[in-house]
Image 1 (spheres, rainbow, N blue to C red):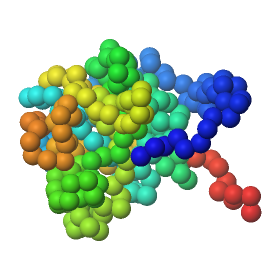
Image 2: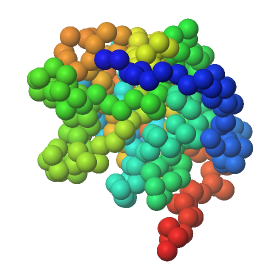
Image 3: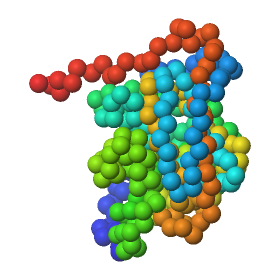
Image 4: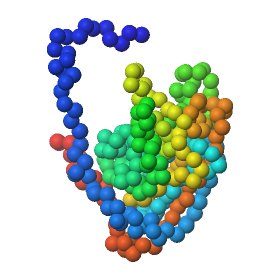
Length: 285
């Protein structure tokens, strides 16, 4: 299908030449206190662990001030992560605002923000063993907040079949098990994800979303500091390392490990979780 049906105007070059402006001034965001978080990480005590099986998802709880580590084990595997306020599922991870405030791909020092009207950091990324990757020649980067999650509805549109182990379904089952409800009754709580370990970008010619084989290897991990009490759900994507296909059973898949830690660092004595957004919510009325 031809997308460009109109002739360029005479001033097209001038219009395209306007400078790019960063939408949000990052200097106004809460400062990443590396010394504080490094102190937290230096005195971690294991609390509990969860193994996420291939093509499935599990939930886990992370109390405020604790650290959660998501690790690759056995083989290269990406994961789709959802986060909620443990006490209020209406407050959940907002990938779009996280993308606007930070970047298309996140790493150490970036925060995972919640949706409006709460709009506050739910978690802070404090360690990323894949931070060396940066952006490759294709424009691909790691841990994206631009994709959604593979889902059975899109798969049905594109392939005409029901596949029940897409990340959306995996996360729905996991949350349903946690709440002792049916997947159909909770799937509206499933939201756009942090694509942990996933390598993605946009093609330069067509600007289409792409994925490529993740550089993750067993032993790599991503650590998050919980800025409030969190309920998490992680799906071990049916795409494996997302280097070939997804939404099917043809790709080798591996488990992911979730470990929750408490910090005994003295700096935690002065730490307190952040308040919800201070906007009045009057909206001019």
